Length: 156
Image 1 (tube, rainbow, N blue to C red):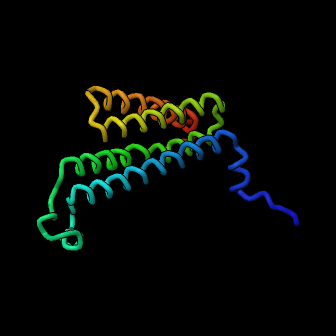
Image 2 (cartoon, rainbow, N blue to C red):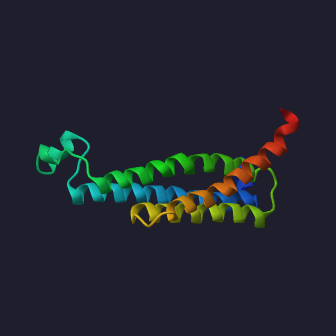
Image 3 (cartoon, rainbow, N blue to C red):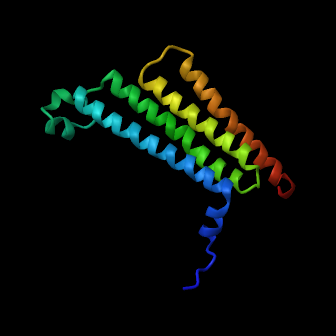
């Protein structure tokens, strides 16, 4: 059987892109975990956003807000606001030919910053833990964006 060089097989052989995919998938899994935690907290606190869910779990009195459920939802929303742009910027950055070591550092710093941010959010750690984690995670994103712009500026 002759195997054709598909675009996907070429991309996966790109070490930087594969490294990006590794951290990107870990971040998506982390987002799923935050969503599951939010659902579990809703069930435990009996705080449902929709009346039909409250009725299913005991009555309309449980159609209410809960501060910890709201905290989980804010952590999830913050992930959406930060991880989705990272997935775009990181993918494009991977295609600009950066060094594997430098790219891995960018991806790892972002990943660790986002994990710490989520932990700080969910456990309500003292300030400025969450803000520092956010800021640390933004540094590689800004760096990658600037490197992308430098790579494509001649074509603008």
